[in-house]
Length: 146
Picture 1 (cartoon, rainbow, N blue to C red):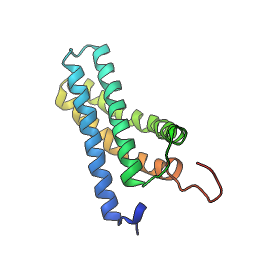
Picture 2: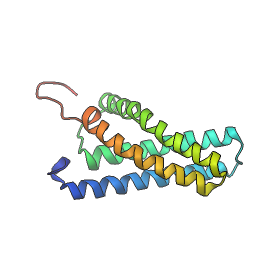
Picture 3: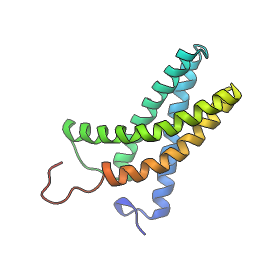
């Protein structure tokens, strides 16, 4: 079975996992920087929010070009696709945030929080790929405009 752009399934999974890992590192790196300001609830919320946005943008750019080989150009096309990408990301972000928060409450350490984040992101990325393949980067039928 072949993935998008002629990639084998193995190559597709390897690439997708590498991009997920990179976006996860961006997300957690941004969180760590923000958490240098303390671990109070508002700082924690800001860390999760800003980290999530940084990871989302990183993953969108990588997925668009190297997973789904999307050639759409222009602000209108990007806006519509990124809007759908972010919308479906809300569902998978809930998985991520929930897992990260449960682990934080259980352990109250960066190691516990990050373990929950990695688990939540891993599950979320599997769900996200399936949603993006079907609803965000699905081929446009001939005659339809992007």
